[in-house]
Length: 103
Image 1 (cartoon, rainbow, N blue to C red):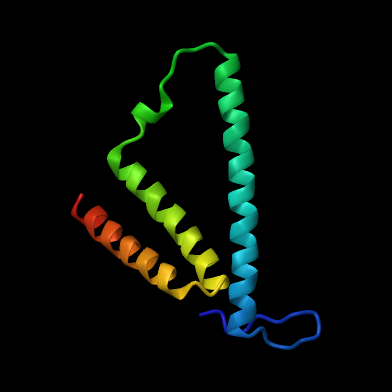
Image 2: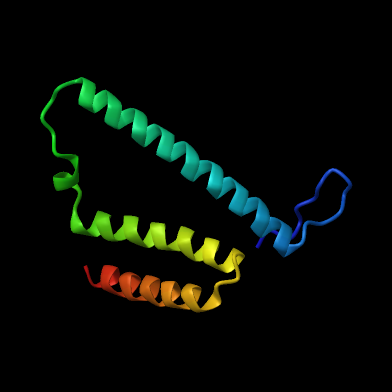
């Protein structure tokens, strides 16, 4: 684990601070990916090439995308202290991961 991370004041980051930093990084990555996806779709539509992108995505990839979406949702639910919904979301993630492992 990363135990020796220091901030500007030479104090160690707590696990909570590291998790908050990781969440900020993930949020920025997700936001940037959404922007890039929208740009890609606009470019694809402008090219007038008849491509059905959704048909080319494998079931395994669709499952990975759903797990990723649920992980982001789980984080939001936990931050909002909606623990019952978070628990259901967590169970769904476990189920999908189990199904994915069988593929």
